[in-house]
Image (cartoon, rainbow, N blue to C red; front, side):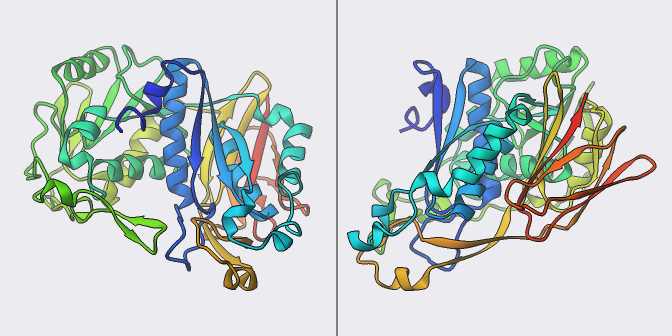
Length: 414
């Protein structure tokens, strides 16, 4: 199972890896039977996949499922936000409707047409590479070989929380699996909750710091000198036969109770400690969000500097791409109001992990963005024909967006 779930292992014999967005994208939270993963978690999964791709010099695509143009647009935008190719599928038979009704529903080419046509007509907006202003170290040792790495309140929560904070702040991150030899590519490496570290990892981290890199370690840590009082179990306190998932409604799985175990929080108010030259530590976990301001300030000061700075991202998750022609920023909303065709839902003769979502409206985002940069950018809103307006300011510009804008691109030509 471990190998089958790991894109690093898949890529030993492949040059193209698929990340499947199972269930509804974006989520429809009113149906407890369907699979509804938040868009922010899709971004985190994609970041991990793309890290595997970068170290293998391969490519990545995301497969998402939907039945209407609003869902297709978000699935496409989600892939493009992190530089993955998009595979969109309807799989209409999963709706459990009679063939006579299925034949009346739109085909794949009809619902993805707007997104793919935009990409074809503006191909130069997608020809760059995602910038890694900072790196986030993913601890395979912690994830695979500790109980902390297996529970929902454990390691992955801190890794995901770190990435989400960076995306929302407009600081474009890369996931990495090995510490760089020098600070040339990544001046700052964030290391959330590395509970278990091998001697080789510890030495690689020290070598990176000796060569000018800045390491920011948080949470329960196995690095020498990182003092904390977390007390985590080494194994679940249940019998092996209880590990297996229980089935609810015959479709969606409930995680085993031990995986949902609530882990104790460490509330000591210790301050940041420089445990070794260039290696900084705080015992709080990043999933608590108590360290966000300090970590983001550190990344802005020491991370890779770009000629464009997002001073107010309006609640969007943001990534930055650079090519020979220009710098492109992708903004995507992560929270949505969604609704379904309730009549079709009522006459389904079987349930599956998807719904026929026909309303998708972004929530929690503002209609104004502020950027600091020389020059005035072009702004593209692929799903909003009315477009955006740009007003130049003393140190940059203000972007005014149309209503219900879920995704936009901001392009600065070089």
